[in-house]
Length: 419
Image (cartoon, rainbow, N blue to C red):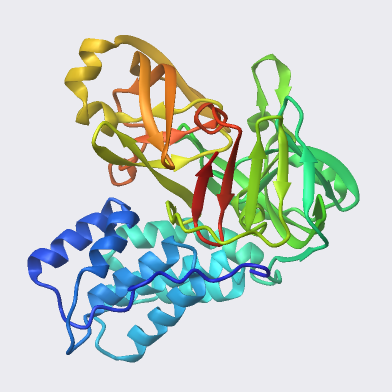
C-alpha cells in the first residue's frame, strides 16, 4: 500500500534452532489465542545457531502479518516454501497467511491464486477450518480478480470536522457523503441504494458476511474509482454493498456507509480530538509503542485489568466498551458478587440479539498506558462467537478512547496512543 512504511520488529528473525516441544506447544497455543503480543515476545527469546524450524518460521510470518508487515511476511513465506522441507499441512497454513497478505496489499488476483492453491491441495481435507474460511472468501476474490490495487495520493495534511455524529466527510465519484468510521469493518461499506445512485457497478457475489451479532447476511461488492477524504485521494476503493435495511436502525436512523479498515489503514496515522476533529498528518512521526496488532483485518490491542494483560478488539465504530464471556469466566466470582444480572442487547450491522449479562457499576482499566474508568459496564456471560473465535476479552469502544484529549491510531508502527 502506497505511503506505508514496513514495520521492522527487532529480533524477529526466524529462530535458528528447533525449539523444544514444550516451547513449540506454548507458541502454537499463543497463536491459536491470537495473542500476537506474547507470541512476538516469546519468539524473540528463542535462540540458537544451527538449523531453522519451519514451524517457528511460520509463526514468524504470522507475527509479521499481525504487526502490519505483509511484504516481509510474504518474503518469509516464500523462503519457507522454497526449502522443500514444509509438510503439506504447513503449506496450507502458509498459503492461508499469504492469501491474507495479498488482501492486505490489495492484490486480489494473487489472493485468488492462493485461495485456489489451498482448495486444490490434496491435503485440504486435513484442515477443514482453513478450507471453510477460504471458501467463504472465494466469491469476494472472484468478484475482484481484475481490480487494480488501491492507491492513494497525499496532497497535504488533513483536518476534518466530524461533528456530533462523528461521521467522516468524504467524496465518492464526486458526490459528498458522511460515513461512520469503523476500524472493525474489514472493508468499507455502502448502502445498495447509494451505490445505485452513484452508478457504481455492483458485482454479484452473494457474500456471506459475519455481523457483530454473529448473524450471517448476504452482500455484493463494488469498486469506486475515486474517493477523497480531506487532502487524500484514493483510487480503486472496494466497498461491500449491503441491503439498506442492514444499515437502518430503530427510529429510522440511517448510516449510508462505513469507512472501513483498508481506507483508514492507508492514512498511516489518524488523530481523533475530543472536539470531534480528525487530523491526518502527511508525514506522521515514528511511534515506539507497538501495542496494536491485526488478526486478519481486525485491529487488536492489550488492555490491563488488575494485573492481567487482556486481548481486546479496537473498534472505533462502537460507542460503548463491552466485555465478552472469557472476561466473565476469568473473573466470575468478582463479577457475580459486584454486579447484577441483566439482559443486554448486542448488535450493530445486521441487527441486535439479546444475551445474558452482568452490569458492573464501575471498572478501572489501563489502555495504552493511560488509566480509564468505565461506568455501567456490561459483561456478557455467553459467547457470541464460535468457540474458535471466542478469544477476545472485550471490545474497546469510544467511551474509552474519548476520555482523554485525543487518541492516535498509527498503522505504520502499529501504535495506539492516548493523550
